[in-house]
Amino acid sequence: MARCSSRRLGGGALVTGASRGLGLLIARELARSGCQVMLCARSADELAAAKRMLRDEGAEVRSLACDITQEGVPANLVRATEEAFGSLDVLVNNAGTIQVGPFAAMTEADFRDAMETMYFAPLRLVLAAVPGMRERGHGRIVTISSLGGRIAAPHLLPYAGAKFAATGLSQGLRAELAAEGISVTTVLPGLMRTGSHTAARFSGQPTREYAWFAAAAGLPLLSMDAERAARAIVRAAERRRPELVLTPLAKAAVRVHGLAPATTTRALSVAARLLPGCGPEPERGVPGRHAARTLGSAALNRLTALNDRAARRFNQRII
Image (tube, rainbow, N blue to C red; front, side):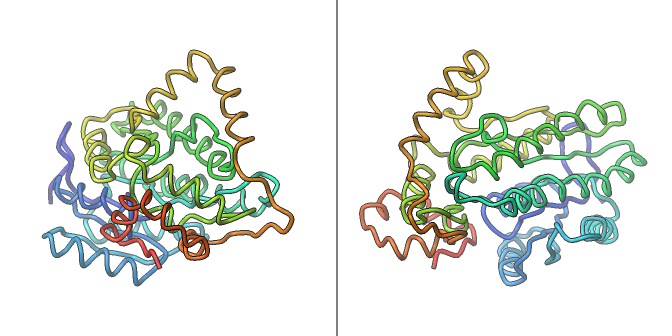
């Protein structure tokens, strides 16, 4: 079995949220880098399709359908990966949910769900994975956070709060585990064309929220090609980089926020005023694909064409 060296990846890898989008692409790149990959996601059907896709390319992959927020699942998942491949050398915490809408349309349950998926589940996976990595004297942990984990954008507060927590955990782990040969990389992507606009959930005025989010996520000047992003993430893990910020816009935003945080906050306040209000009869948790059908906008469909194409290619359901 291949082992992780100072640069080249190998051995067993586990990727959460790997049935579609960025997680699927990261799994593909890990396999190309010499890893045997365990895919994990909630949907058994989507996971089976992802496994077939990667095996057709010659990747050595296995899969386990599960909900990582459930008690005991993270430890079982790590154990299954170690039993399948002999060791867990690369852990990629990628699973996430996106809830879009004004704060007034959100409930405490939305924030708890985001924290369970994007903070507590990754924490439990790390707690389960680190003992084996520590015993072998090496390992890599990759946290897929977000630009929203550094700069909290309006109408994404459950997501941003959980990503802030994930960023802090990842950076702290980097400092604590470095002496034990375990590298931790924090990834802060901006918008990427993964097709996630179809799976995000929209509250308040769902069609109006969907319109701005889907348009922004699909425009080439604002978003990044997901395959290029996946290659950059795996390369950063190979090189044991502490942090990776993806997309030129995200890099610029991080720099501006670091130099002039008050200016960034004022700009976000202006943006919040331009976004849709809660509406007289707010709806909650409408999937993007449903909002798109209700909206039925040909003009928006043209703006989202690249992202819709990405959704089809990367195993996202769009209908």
